[in-house]
Length: 510
Image (cartoon, rainbow, N blue to C red; front, top):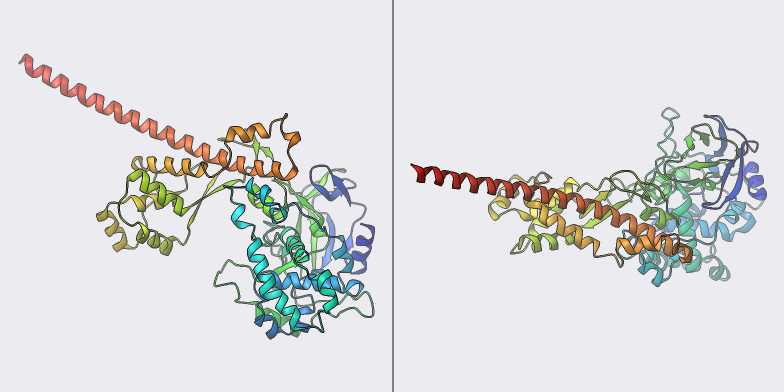
């Protein structure tokens, strides 16, 4: 760490070494530690915007040529930034970020690097379909490799096996996934701070943008006479024009140039609702500031935005386990969620209602109006209104469906008695998608068994158990409501029969 902090200062970064240091923590690895009592509002370190590593600050895109960059598809997704990082690493000491690159991890515990046997432990969870290995490798072979081969002057043939191999590609992608921030160009509005809702994300500091605003001024910070010059302001403007609007028509999608590696800031770990420091954004610097008093010896925590364990595992290779609140009990992640696919709902409704005919036209109508084929349950174990609306839509009679279609408006998501059997079936079918039961997982995490679990298997069990507990909680709520409604219905029928019998008795007497 001494070499890294020396480099950081030489590049214009400022660090209060009397307040913050680094240590290895048993449960979270290397992280930042308070060396003394730190008051709220104290600046721990500041980072020149030009020291962030992104498509805007690396000189590779402009040296490659913006039009050629776009022709190879490097302006979409993360493949362009991955290539920049690979190239900067290949430059060795000539790269401005050489010392930073060497300080980053080379191994990861994320599912991207798991064996097929280990991934099977995640069957049924939201993780499996989001690992993205196939998509990443498709970009590697269809975009990155052709781009490299087109410019032998930039990518020397002898360096390709060492710096541009598929293994390095996955490693660089994982560095971005676990350590990057969302860094937009400086708008010059009012020196505001961004909402650091998810500092490490998809791109860790990118799935839920935290807004580190990057201006167009990129000081070179050269460390050697042969250092590669960063792009000039005019070139950065060309980059912004090239990348704007290339988000597949998704307004919420992230501009690739806004994903940046931020030295020093990515050293901080995060844990559920433990944040005590946050990045604030100024025109020329990013500053990490204590958001509450931190006692000497305590870990300094940034924030991931408190995502569910499925996302934590996929992005960072770990999970959060803290006490849970009602209606759940025990330990887990209070931010956990369960995803239910629309096709599972269609199957369950067809079975529960014995629906005849093709429901696809209703599904298509739903997708046009709601544009969402996944429903999310949270730790409150409440059935979401969107799911209720979808089940209601699928359960309508032919006449009711024709009226809804004519109005062009989805049914309201009310929890009605007639929907309860279908909801029960949906939840039960979703639980069947996991390879183990709740009881089996709880046993695996028990004190006698947990010591024999590998790190990856333990994390897989924690993720799937958290999801299953939500499903069980929701199922118990719906079944209790169904039983109550049946009880009321039974009492009403009994009362009706008694009233009828009483009426017959009075008539006989007369």
